[in-house]
Image 1 (cartoon, rainbow, N blue to C red):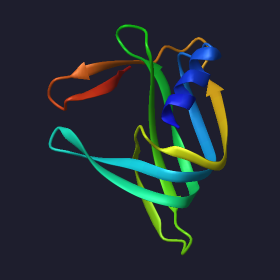
Image 2 (image 1 turned 120 degrees about the horizontal axis):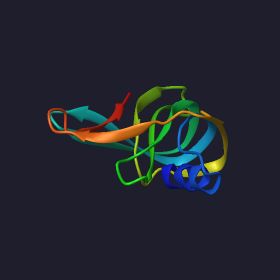
Image 3 (image 1 turned 60 degrees about the horizontal axis):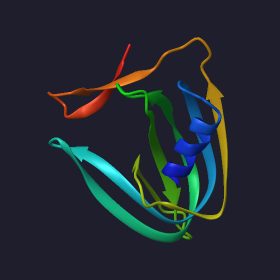
Image 4 (image 1 turned 45 degrees about the horizontal axis):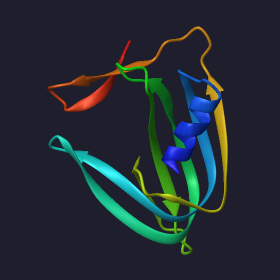
Length: 121
């Protein structure tokens, strides 16, 4: 799913913006950042996307970067959340809204201390 969001931003030439997403997933991979790396959690669905929001920026090479956090719920309405990672797949549908920041430049650059690509403001 995150690759589809990135492709949509690229196709629309969005270099800075925010995203909001609702829908469902057949599975999700979420990350929790600790000690310089992401610890991954994988859940199989069906899962409801209770909330998903993030931002769109570019890296030092001009490549589009999606940074998004997600909360999903199970059939028993148990909620789980974290950083949205690759290999998460849409279930029945996903509704994406992108709000572009016009005349705004959001760039991410690698930070050696945190080992993360942080926004440069």
